[in-house]
Each structure stands twice: as structure tokens, then as C-alpha cells.
Length: 182
Image 1 (cartoon, rainbow, N blue to C red):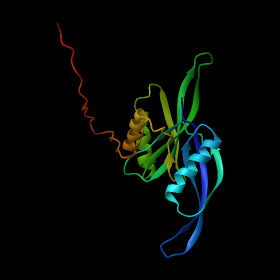
Image 2 (cartoon, rainbow, N blue to C red):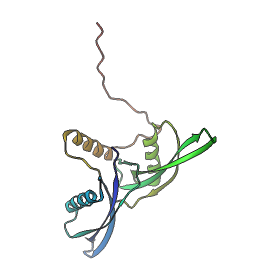
Image 3 (cartoon, one colour):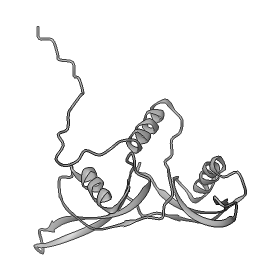
Image 4 (spheres, rainbow, N blue to C red):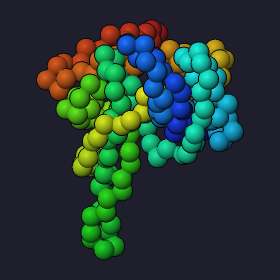
């Protein structure tokens, strides 16, 4: 089952360094199965971060096909990836677009991270646009069951990982048991 991401805008009062207060409205992403669940989840998540009163001003379905966190990155970028397919009947090239949310520090790193994510793609693709997203944080859904705990740890590990640069060699540390021959 694929994830449905909801963009939730949260309005709250924030105290700055000088002690003055200002009202902010910031977007967050939550993984949920309905608008109602998205509202419930964003309320739970924000209650942990904001001690004062806050208000959810908008919830809408986000059009992200995939979310990719990376370590040492504090901003989210929206990558537009055009998948290229050839229509055999007409002989023309068709493009279908998908959007990914990739964590990075700047546009160049977002491009590199998008290339890293797409490296095992079998078909042709191009990356026509990358722009900084206003998304402040992403809250994926995990039920708390044991195998889901592993998924949460893997998501957080990805958030804490650094992509391999194109010129670096990937070292495989996995060990496999060999079958004993009789």
C-alpha cells in the first residue's frame, strides 16, 4: 500500500531571540489514510513541539510520489522527475512527471540526492526542476508493531545517512551464508 501524504499548515505564535512574539504558519507533511487521521496525527506531532496554542489552518493531499530523508540536511526540496517512455504506436516520446521530496542543504545537493535515489531506475528519466520546499518536517506513519519499529529506525537512519558521491566506491559489508555441499 502506498503512502498518502497530507500537507498540513499549522499556525502558532513563536517567541524569537529578542523576546518578541510573531505568528507563523508553517507546512508539515504527515502520512495518513484520511483527512481526519491527518488532522489527528498533526495535532499529536505538533503537541510534542509547540507548548502554546496552535491551529491547523489547512490540510490537503500532497502530490509527492516518494519522500527521501538524508543526514546532515535541514531543508526539503521538491524534485520534479520526468520518466521517459516511448509510445510504440505513434513512435513518439512520452513523459510522465512525478515529484519527490528530497532532504538536502542546497539545490546542488538536492540534485545529487535525487540522482542517488534514481540510480537503480531501469528506464530513462530527466530532472527538469528542483526547488526548495516550504515543508518544515515530515512525519511518516508507523503503527508501533515490531516490524514497523524497524521501518521507523530505517527511516530515521536514512534521515541520518549521507549519500554516496558519484565518484566514491560503494563497499558492500553484507555477509551471506554459503550452502554446504554434500
